[in-house]
Image (cartoon, rainbow, N blue to C red; front, side):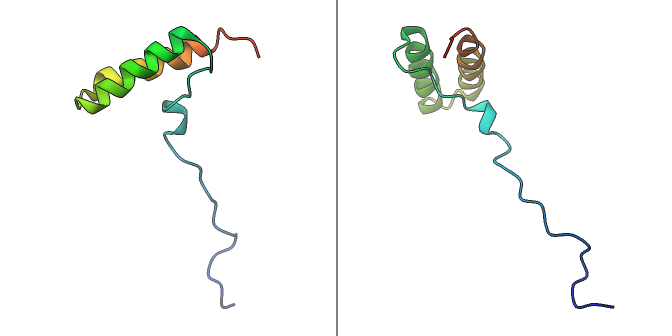
Length: 66
């Protein structure tokens, strides 16, 4: 038996919730308003409202053309 008991190297996983915190598109008024709504909701500890704002930013961002 060799000194390494694992057959393969460990897998490095990324941040599991990174896609749940989308960045607003710079220069978009709607994205900025949703980002502000999300910020205020987090500050008031209204996390359900913050999640909905993040979903709206992510879905709205799909309509932007880079």
